[in-house]
Image 1 (cartoon, rainbow, N blue to C red):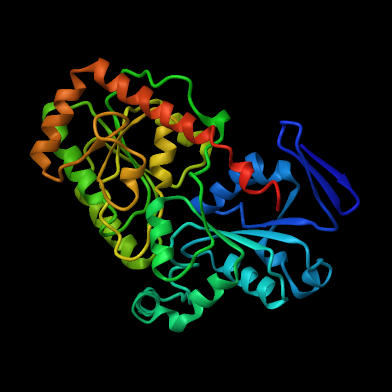
Image 2: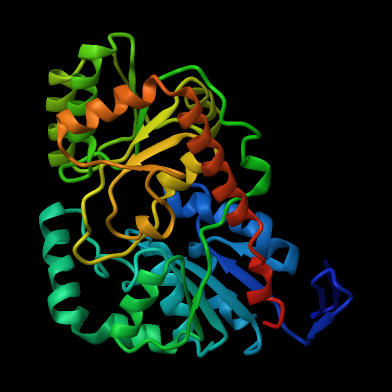
Length: 367
């Protein structure tokens, strides 16, 4: 609960304990209007956690010099940062440059603020920039900025460890946000259809998902594969065009779709194929896995990156062997075992509920 008294704010955690934050305002800086998974995360995080605690949502481009002149040195900022969030990066630099030190940030692609730190329209220059981030440490820029941030939040233990290795010590670990209202009540479905949901490009897993589906339909001719996602760069679009030309039988390419239509697609399938590869430099938590867990779907993925912190093979998800014939045989085995599939789906929902029940606000009550 939040009560405003001028610029004094009384915060209550619901237990009768109140905290007074004198002569300060709280700002949550992130774009919530784009297609980015980080922006969707920010919308949920403000709705569930920071909004009720008095944080005002501010678009990055609104954080101007004039805006900051009106802010008190006691004001608190929280910013969502991750790959390609260049507007948020620029807002962070303006806030720090204005002398503010009550600045918290969530890093979605630790240990980097953005990856690359310097973004370009050219994919070739972006690759060079990423190399500079990794091998040259952005000439120390990212590390220096991180040391000015009061608290750095990450969504995984592996992300926290990556920050510790570069000398960041003010780290707080919180689970990925899940709104309780978005968790489905039941995993029950009779469909065996499959979904691929995420980035489109080489080494993103889409090609293995298509190949595996092509093997599965030999034994299960009616099973369809739904593909949600878009290719961003010209080389990725050419790659995706080639895949679409090659894999057409029982494959539905939906492109980018809004949340309501995502729900409708999920309602008519049971399996989600996310054949991830190990990322070399960053440690994100998969929003595609989170979206699938809260709908009680059976996630088939790989024990790489931060996945093993969320999924246990055979309990709330399944790990792919990356052998087409082995994975297709396991699909056939489970397709005949409705009880097992329903149990995995219900365990997925239980995992999502555990995320939603986490007391996120405890990190922010005292400012």
